[in-house]
Length: 230
Ligand SMILES: Nc1ncnc2c1ncn2[C@@H]1O[C@H](COP(=O)(O)OP(=O)(O)OP(=O)(O)O)[C@@H](O)[C@H]1O
Ligand SMILES: Nc1ccn([C@@H]2O[C@H](COP(=O)(O)O)[C@@H](O)[C@H]2O)c(=O)n1
Image 1 (cartoon, protein in one colour):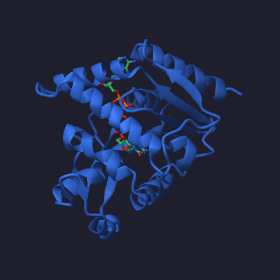
Image 2 (cartoon, rainbow, N blue to C red):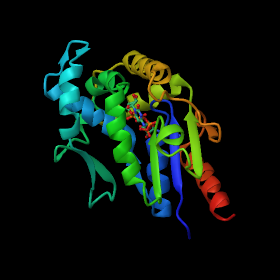
Image 3 (cartoon, rainbow, N blue to C red):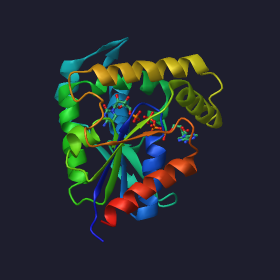
Image 4 (tube, rainbow, N blue to C red):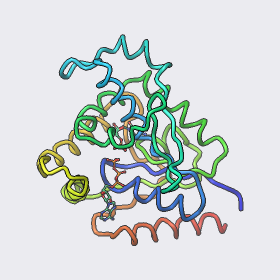
């Protein structure tokens, strides 16, 4: 069967990666979490002292951007791609609240986006890919055959993310901190000049506030099956 490109965009913590990952596994496509790439660049900035409080040293980051190596390697056990920063697996480090608090500032920078979008387009050149993010259907793959825009109530999203943090032994972060981070990221992502988060005109909208993971997966699979059976 001819392979297609699937773009899943939407708000923070609404389940994009969960459904993109599950769908890719089910249909034998490559899965790429584009947010992980922006998180990896953010981690680089933190680790290399490019942040002075809230201030980011843009000149230093611009000098370094071409030499920051961000790529994915398959975890042989989970069969899922994991993100590497300069050849080090950083899958866990990029999921901290420290990175979450700074990533939307980094991802709003034009030269950072240009570099990441170039890599993402290379990864999807052969199709057969499910990529999730904020600008996948609008900028990275504007010709994607299937575009989904995911949304959910911020309170529901915050609770899901908090539950996840608790399973990772984070007992400190509060519900209000998670909610504030989600609101802040949504605001910055929607209002930045470069490739703001918005629904592509030809995207199908999914509000999964009241759907289980299984229900959202079935919804997505139905859309995929319908499209590829045409
Ligand atoms: N339908 C659902 N019902 C309950 N929990 C869900 C559902 N979908 C996803 N989750 C959970 O919500 C949390 C956030 O999901 P996920 O990481 O997939 O979101 P995301 O949109 O990719 O987030 P981010 O943009 O922050 O990377 C995870 O803990 C996931 O297991
Ligand atoms: N295509 C994308 C993907 C992500 N971002 C930015 O990265 C942040 C983290 O992404 P998650 O999917 O892991 O939450 C996100 O808040 C965006 O600022 C992006 O700009 N474009």
